Image (cartoon, rainbow, N blue to C red; front, side):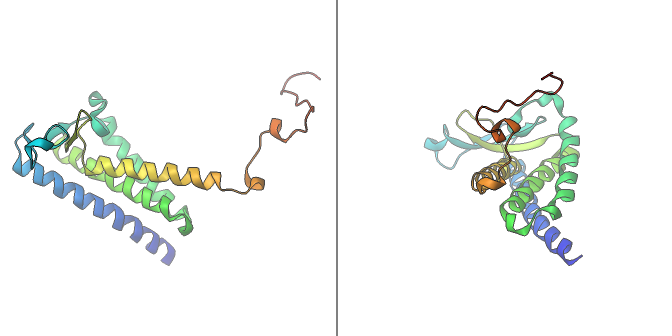
Length: 183
């Protein structure tokens, strides 16, 4: 039981921090900029990086705005899966735990907007890239950490732990029959 409390404390500290930062930054933008208004601390920075008050009914980075209901239901399913799966991740795989915390915080941060406002407030605009927010960045960073860690972990497995297909296990010249094929 103590293991679960410690595991969930770690998860909820990361996710809670992301949610607080995400909601605070969105509040600052909504309070200080009218819808579609842009701001940059220096005029020369405006073409490259600016803050804009933007409303997004789609997924991260504004894709698929017509599927708003899907992007309201999907974070609930993802959050449930992360909460269920998290205690099964060994503590030695802490990058996975961090990644899941970032993804949970991001998913719930945007879900709060969808449920309370009907849209997600996005505000970071870089060049011609889509406008995004702290929650979107958190989900993206969590995904990059997860993929990178899994890739390195798989690459560094000893050769005897890597599963081979039947074709790779066969000795040179040995024929592997296909199922249903007569010999």
